[in-house]
Image (cartoon, rainbow, N blue to C red; front, side, top):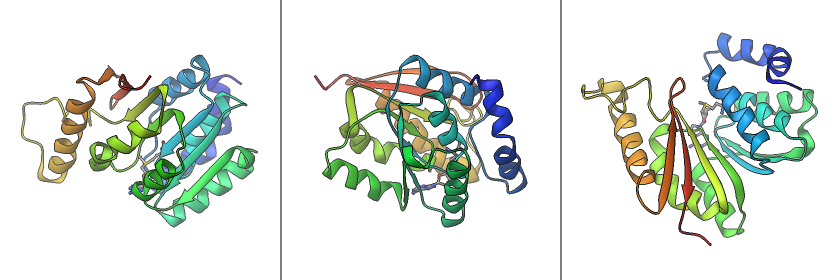
Length: 204
Ligand SMILES: C[S@@+](CC[C@H](N)C(=O)[O-])C[C@H]1O[C@@H](n2cnc3c(N)ncnc32)[C@H](O)[C@@H]1O
């Protein structure tokens, strides 16, 4: 299925997100994610921030062989995501968790799980705090793809962010500072809100 055909299949879920003001990955970033999973043949994927299953469905549609582990803290969104995955026939390839991502990360680390792609799209203020566990969960050639790292240009701007965004901007700057220095390597894709593609060079 190509991306445009997939967008037609996901029309209802996008409409639902719009009506309920649920933030989901934007169109060009979604296309990037879809192509990334195809081109890198990602098979074992962890998503932080399921919301209603939109980006999760994009990931699952991109490769029939991939398996998704995804976590969401909001019960209503979690239930909607469950419906989304069931309707699209993806239930067998998804492990869904209704809990705080921080706790899931600790659980996965204790189980020595590893992923070739981690799609980071939960609470922006937590990206930096998650980093040690995310690093632990990466396969040697694995990648963390973090969405919204530029936050409408605010992260790189010299202007003082509004009170509402200040803490998020500070935390994202902290995340970007960490992942753009050794032992990490990061490429920033300047699409929409910005995607950071991070590799960890400390594992053999
Ligand atoms: C931007 S939305 C995710 C959108 C989704 N990835 C998509 O593109 O379809 C972020 C989600 O992260 C969830 N979230 C926020 N804090 C969380 C936490 N501590 N643990 C797990 N999920 C969290 C929110 O409830 C929200 O649904």
